[in-house]
Length: 331
Ligand code: TXA
Ligand code: MG
Image (tube, rainbow, N blue to C red; front, side, top):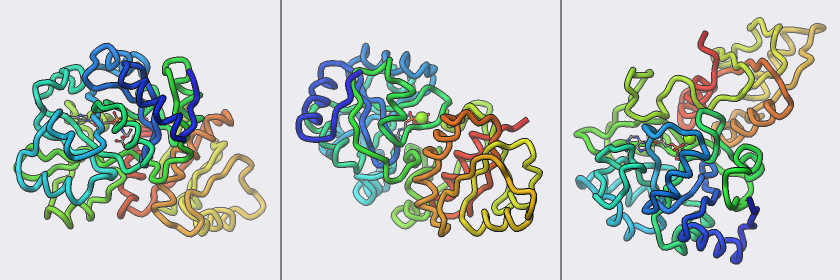
């Protein structure tokens, strides 16, 4: 594995490597992606191997400009076209009817393909220069926390990838919103970096796929996903102050007032373990950006039991709560 900086030379090197069938981890505004040329079946197969990802879980194909969409998919109607025009580049993935040329391995045999145009300038420049659409799942072992920093990728997949491009910390910090626009009403398969309200402002009401269906429409819906090694207990928003956290060696608070309430409720018998506050002022964007980073840090510190509280269920809070729930111990 070689670490590349996100300067002109690093970007050119990464683009060339992708075109040649190598695996390149790239920064995006959501999380780091593990990129491969989407038209190169051997490279795509290596992505599944590197992540130990089951082949029934399809990949997102990334493009740099709207003109490239034609190579992989098409808009099934006006609504999809409008969403792409309004929300790309950005943290929205559209599930679209696929072109024949996209290998079945990328889409797990589905006749749809998930497509996203990332907003991160480094990601876009690498994709543009590579000249190919880039299949890229999050750059983490299957089921584990997504990476929001280059060092997370190096630690988790350093032995499996050819290059990691270091673009610093990801601004959004949770994965893109996956929206299926192949049906009558658009359907959110995975809440993510683009809030539902932003989507509905463009296309009117959308459906939200909820729960964990026995046959997930999108494996991001699997009950257990995005999980740290430590056991994570999830409580209601603001409820850590009232929770029996005796076995916890790490606490994850939403905001500072919640942390303060916790300590006031326990004067004298404070908490000896680690603590992280997602956003001291209670800002949901900051909370999303800090979430995976905090959980990676807890795992690095070797904690075994995390207690976390939900965040307010609005805007990006939906995506944060979704990831917390999937990371949590449901037994
Ligand atoms: O922000 C993101 O989306 C990041 C960055 C790298 O772009 N990528 C990412 O990819 O999170 P991944 O593979 O970890 O998640 C892709 C999600 C999965 O839940 C997958 O099941 C779903 O998209 N998906 C992909 N193709 C699909 C399809 N044709 N139909 C339904 N769901 C699909
Ligand atoms: Mg993932």
